[in-house]
Length: 422
Image 1 (spheres, helix red, strand yellow):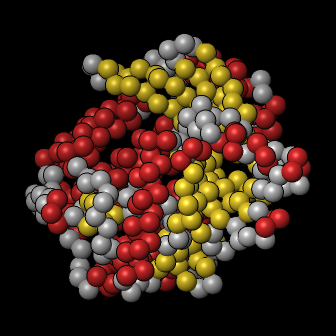
Image 2 (cartoon, helix red, strand yellow):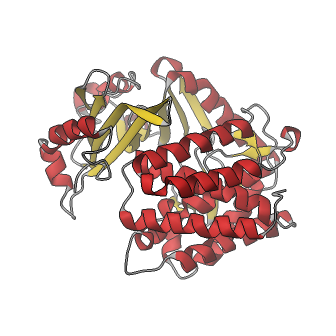
């Protein structure tokens, strides 16, 4: 196994990626991560900048080795290697150091020796770390006997908006009869660029999707999602369909840059979408979660909790419905394992899952979604999904071929349904 195996000697990024591969392969954590039973996970992200002529220039790549260790004060450790194509230099950051979350290290300093070390009264359990973006953790003060809260470090420019949005969503849910709840805000530390919210003893809904009753679970997800779209939350950004269309152009070129054999087909799909952009009325937009997926729905003693409203916006709800459908094969382990397994055909399974989710949404809304409009967004979201998998080094030949086949099928279905999308 190697980093970005689809970047070969003829690719413009090859010299940079080869340099990174050499450096990464020297680290014991990389060798450890290659073992099937290893507790070390590898999180990777590549960013490029588009230049004239449809080409791309590499900006940076990070490789983050992450693992849980219950013997450590934070129950977590990570080493992140950041490669800059401009400087051709690799910088290493040992958790919790992160140049884009600069306050995390000082915040955790008191917990570095454990809850009883050096007079500290913090007990910290890191839950999720996305280098350069966010860090989520559970924290409590055992000496005070307080209940745990969830803390979230984000970039300083995003802090106020994320916390204010959480508060507004929490109040909107409290005002409206709903089938889900939202964790209550519990304070903000502006100096440390961290905010806090209520901790809920819950597990991700994705765990329940391992059972034979997954259709019932997905119907409930659809109903919950519909309730999210009815919330009266106004002070969030407004989505711009023009920016979405522009991003489709860029993502098609990004995919073709790495997979030139599919360039003609992808250009045909892009042209199909550009020709049939649905009519939108921003005044009719609904409140949208921004990143609604099964893993952002928790089960807490039989009731549902929706988390992570950081990217909330007012938008066409069809966008979010289509995005969840596209992400099922990545977000839910039960589907992901089958989607990458050459011995299993996951197409029918995913189709049934999407149908159950849409049925739940429609039943809760007491109206039928426009299938043509939903299909337009679904094709766009599948393109976004494919581009994202390339950037995160999560693409393999099996999943790539299956997404391309899916895009073929969806595009033919769209063409067969007539010219207009709304």
